[in-house]
Length: 423
Length: 163
Image (tube, rainbow over all chains, first blue to last red; front, side):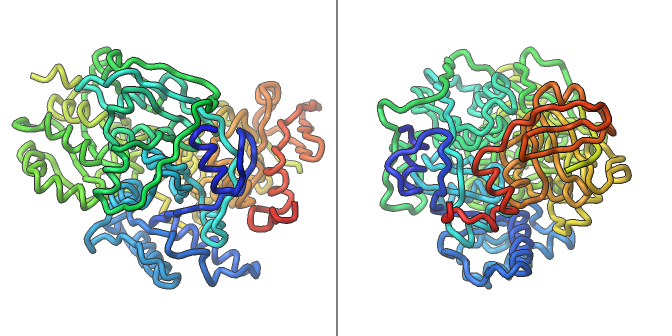
């Protein structure tokens, strides 16, 4: 069995599972945030009316709560959702609630690794599509809707069809000017936004072994944009070190068998990778930066679970140090812990000196919620994950998706720019 | 189950156009319905009728996990979406929450069915009848688990232990 089959077999008390088997998997951790939480509360209200008890969760210690989409509260409806969420965690005795304005908080998928909420081998589900992110820690991490999350909260398990697995092998390191974001965009460009549909996308090979945990998180995060059920990397010492530094203990590493089966193998050479952008209006609409049309940009957005981890901010800082931005640029660290490190290591000064607005952790404009949404005809380069029509604001605005290096270089020139071409 | 078709002849109708991100904070189902399809078809709300079906191409509902998407369509009156394929979270949200039927169709049905056609879907025989054009097409059958959850009326009414 491969790693995902092993995790799902263990979680459903079976000795073996194969693709297309339907299992009810016991869940190890579950997450809701300020959008899916109120959605779940609504489902609970409906269940109560049907006579189904919602008095007790299956295990409150396995539930954790994030505040990210509309925080700090954008207006009164989102303020009320935060109150609902706080009442919910109080009512059900959920202790792990990361509240804005009270120390550590941030985007759910960032908190999930920054706070070591997810362990290798876990079945982890969340009420958000980018829950896939923590597959980089060797977990089966999968996004679900409100009804499914409500079901998990009450029953501790959920059905899955065991997925087929596509294996993406990266041979050799990515060049310094190429980031994991470029690699995953390249893959999505090759297979399309439904290219991984219903499947696991697994990453391996010497290029992945060499890659930091944070880069692997970027890869798994955007398997969602290929339609995948989950993304995964087999855990190694780097994962142990990453989680141990964040307080985790007793880690055990699940790996696939030597004779594990994969539906399809894809090979990539690290040295051949180039900085790319995804042009409007799809993450599969890929173009190599040096071959891209010269587009005058209005904004640069460096944020989100995809593109505002510490490593992403560090990459932006390498470019912005001693330079000035030519277009409106926002940088929103994805969690308070990252914000703090950026402050301690001088990154915030570099950003402010460059003219950037530094904002609080939030999903913000990535999902068109607030904090810098786009006007009609505005063109933005963004380290986020989707560029569908209206994703970041007006339906006639445009978003180019890129790595933090390309985004920062483009902020400096006002045009889509390969970081190697900066003077 | 009979209904009339609203056709979006394109692939990748995503959750951002089905219900734009700014409405994610809204959890009033009727209010969500007033914004359904706003990113793609601002006239949708005024033209949709109770019992209508949507017809579209590949990868319908791709993007986010927002259950707002099937909810907004369902509370607009949409009883089924017929598409060449579906994104996975939209598909399972539609079924597990019993909001609408996601019907996978073949290319022949996609090409032949037009806006406004009256369609009769029979999930017992996996047949789609076009009453306007007097044609019949095959739908892809539901997998076993999906069929059972649909018959039960959603995930919470499905009892896996009785299988």
